[in-house]
Length: 236
Image 1 (cartoon, helix red, strand yellow):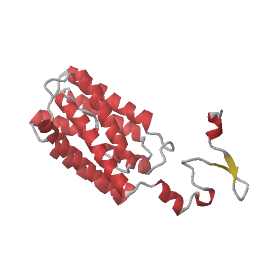
Image 2 (cartoon, helix red, strand yellow):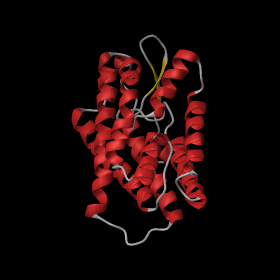
Image 3 (cartoon, helix red, strand yellow):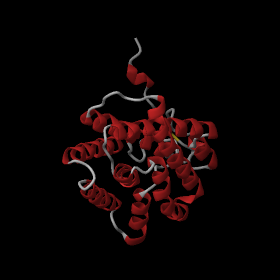
Image 4 (spheres, helix red, strand yellow):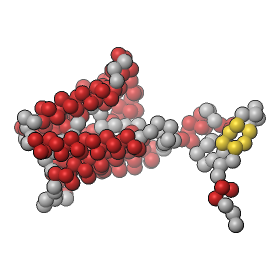
């Protein structure tokens, strides 16, 4: 009987005597660090397209569940939700507009590929979030369910975007920029903005809705914290 250990990656030496671990995710020693190595790990156009589509479907469903529960989240999506609840403005349109000032930062710091993908992600997600209630409406949804499921789905959608070099834009881009240029902690910048947003939300939503919104934001953050770890995911 063959043991499972016999199928584990076997270390081998390269021509210079360095130790190389052979395995399905490890490029051959002669291509490591070369253009061939980079191409082997980079997503193809087809992979990027399907990844972005899935990310949009999942994230917009999460945001639509938030909206149905009368909740909000952090970032620019949260700001768009507040404008929607307070003034009746179209969520998707506001979401696209409030993200516009951040694209110049994205171009300077993340490049055109990231910026164009992020613009497409924000636009598609905003439009689809507005359209979903016309295609699939919920008769009733509890605030707790909305917070947990909406937060989990939105987090998964953002995770998919990240893995395909995109994002849902907003304050996260500015936070990274300030961290690189001024040494400010990106996490603290993001947290400070979201805390301020939750405080403003008390003037628009009931205290219970704000509490459930905070739960949803925590769920979203946990999804990213447990699943987005640099170096673990090989594709870019």
